[in-house]
Length: 217
Image (tube, rainbow, N blue to C red):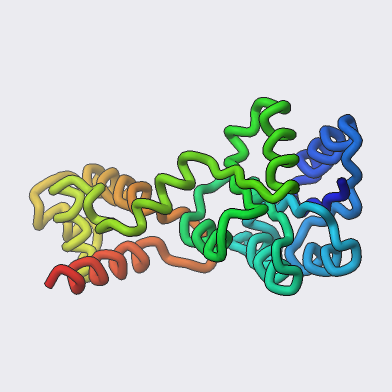
């Protein structure tokens, strides 16, 4: 088996290469960004791609976008995503055409070497290996995203949608500013809004609220 690895962490990249080499799996190329990943896939036509989602330069979705582009060029190309985050929307894109040769594991779960290598072989052989948390988030996308919020968190989000600052929200709801900040942190977490360099989580939370309320209007 020959694989191409895309991981911006030097230590993780070297660690995966070493694990694979120990069981006779050749690493055809190991890169640290999405552009080089696509080039490596075209050059080496590997049996499996192991890719992180977030890589340079923006650390958003470069790795997965490159893998998805490669699957369009090489239908059925096995791809195993190993990410620190549950990227529900990207996971949906990855398996939109079926689960054959697709895997999505969370890095925190890849603690058992035997399990990881078994997932590598399974995906390379045309099977699937999807982390339970990824499946749960994908299923939750079909439900109202606001269902996970408490009544108070929904109130805070409604105030945010009106353009109020944290201080103004605290005054309107007669709570402390610290309480408002805690509620907002919980809202971000429950809506799956991870911090990123080019997106404002507050705006994204408000858009989610507006979309949900429009559907139920």
